[in-house]
Image 1 (cartoon, rainbow, N blue to C red):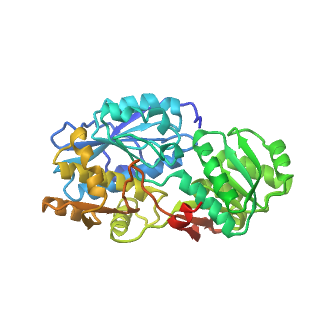
Image 2: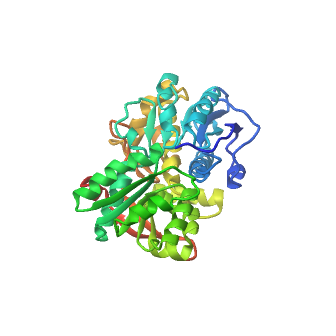
Image 3: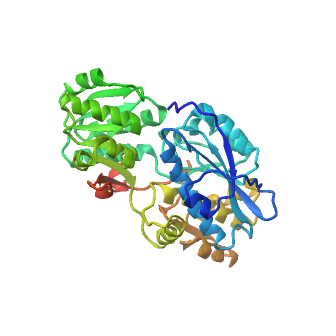
Length: 415
């Protein structure tokens, strides 16, 4: 998806608690993984533009994990720090951003998102740079890269969960309204096939160019097919225009089943919170629980002074923790050495451990570990993917999210 035209800037920063608690994304301190006292993590995300809110998911997850690691002895005694690059959600800007980050010689990278991952994904193996991404694009479902791991769920599972929820609600005639970017289009096939396989009918498909001033003509034709629901994936600005036009046409009166974009309060406010509380649902990874999640939540509250965490932050937190544990298991911060420990600290067999401190203690005691993540078991398959269920959430009139339905992994597998 084409993001706004900006000058990509690399922000070199120590990932301090105070810095990220303020939501800030830059500093003037430069560090390197070759330092005797610091291990550098790169963070590549949309920190400006229409999708800056997604970038904050990565920022928050990384900041909380950094606090957790550094509060428990760091990585092999070294403090974890970061360098950042702003992609603005633009695949073109992502390439120089990646190159600038790589020039800092980080031990590993967090990000990028589905907006830009495909423009740089082939670089990680050749650079021997481990990467932990939450990019949901289905293009990663069968990836074959030694150095790339996905700790967040695939969009194919999200799409199937959307279909399952619609069928559960007996909504069998749906209009599909998606943006024309790659990250949106990879959802269309699994959503359509899963929905149709269980009795649903797609009445029409609108593939929209984002940020146009009006979509009245397209919507007029699409709603003539009389859908009883809408599947949607649009950015906040485009959503606002579509909702306005739907209201003008008298069609803002059926359920809108959105992706994880529907968990963005800007989208809900664009519809109007009162209307959104009746019509709009979003998708979020099934709420985690257990000791690892409790440790994450305590750290999150310490850093951000709230227990309300941003979407997918537990998944990004897990990526950082896994990297730190793999380095500990290898007794090395050299990526070409510790990359071979990523799966062994995450997957069974091994002693289940739930916090960074307890996992490190087990490693120092000579045990093989099986890290159970804040987002759930982080067991990588042969394509370096992990899996979870999805929860459908709905807005209240006060602007908070509440769960209304959970689609379990076994249900998703049947779609």
